[in-house]
Structure formats: structure tokens, C-alpha cells
Amino acid sequence: QSLLTQPPSVSGAPGQTVIISCTGSDSNIGAGYTVHWYQYLPGRAPKVLISEFTNRPSGVPERFSGSKSGISASLAITGLQTDDEAEYYCQSFDRSVNGAEVFGGGTKLTVL
Amino acid sequence: QVTLRESGPALVKPTETLTLTCAFSGFSFTTRGICVSWIRQSPGKALEWLARIDWDDDKYYNTSLGTRLSISKDTSRDQVVLTLSNVEPADSATYFCARKTTTMSPFDHWGQGALVTVPS
View (cartoon, helix red, strand yellow):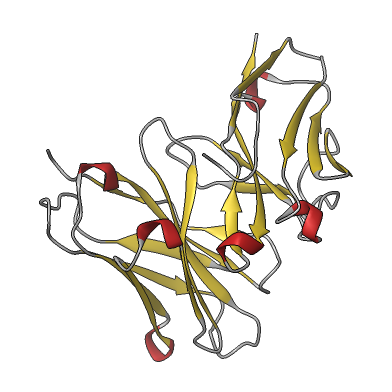
């Protein structure tokens, strides 16, 4: 079981907005560790979408945004496109594993 | 331009040791802060972080894999090697190496992955 909890799946129609949550605990997000978000299409290299909760690397569309609230982080995707259909992962660090990297369980986004 | 490329056997028998190599270019372990990790995805499962080696040779491992993992680097050859001992079918996965520029930064460059199968 992942130390970061994500919904297994979300879905939305083209043009709609979806939000993917990443719930942690006092040993990761609550301990002050940051969160990064990745988009993963099986067969391709994962791509960082959001760093440090809210920062969007150059080249990532503004449709992707991140936020933090308490011990949770969220990824919002607005104006859904069919190309957005992929797996999305949050990643942080956790004191219970000596500050090492941990991934969430992943969320499969289906664009209806 | 930063690139990473994984290489290794596509098929490994149970109980054997898997050795994977990550050859990279566009950066160097001589740069303070550079880290390279190995991450895998087994079929139908989530990404799983395995191990990390830092510019100063500090090493970190996924504790759930016990003492089966070992990571090392060859700074002069720009390579990172991961070994996983006593493999089992559950170790069948696509193995990625990925870079970051500081301990807390995201994995900003990834290899394409190497598919490894351990038959039952």
C-alpha cells in the first residue's frame, strides 16, 4: 500500500476539468516534504508536470496546475483533451523510509 | 541535451541476479547535487522507486526490497549500475533510470525503460 493515496481512476469529457488528489500523512507531506506530479503513458518515459506542489516546468501547458492543502496535494487538469488520457503519479519523500522517495498509487485518467 | 538509456537482459531466471546499466549524457556526477534513481513499474502496478545514488556517492534504497538491491556509479564512464539479487516473477517490470539535479527536485529526465521478465 502506497504512503501517498491517489484515486485509482478519474474520468471526464473533453473540455471538462478533473482534479486528482494525493493524500499523505505526517511523515511525508505533513512533515514538510514537497510533492511532484508526473504524467505516464506506458511505453514512454514519465514526464514531470508539476514540481514543488505548484510549479509548472517550461513546456507544460497552463491547463495543468497543482495545489496543496494540509497533508494533501492536488493536480487539476482543465480543458481536458484526448491526449491527456494517461496515468498520473504524485511523488514525495517519507520519514518512515529514511526520507527516501515515494510514489503514489497512480491515477488512470480516462477522457470520455 | 540530457539523455539516459537503460540496458540489461530482457529475461532473467528466478534466483539469479539482475544487472541493469544506465548510460547517460548531458550531465555529470562531478556536478554537485546530481542524483540518479532507478524506478520500476510492474504490469498493472504503480511506479515504484527502487534506489538512488548521489553525486557524493551517498546511496539510498527501497527498504521493502531488503538487501537485494545495490546501486553504484562510474563517474568516468557516466554510468549507474543497479543489481537486484535473487529475482522472482514479481520483479518482472519495466525498469527506468531517472535524473534529478538536487535531492528534493523532481525527476526531470528519464530513460525510455528496459523491460525485464522473470518467468515463473
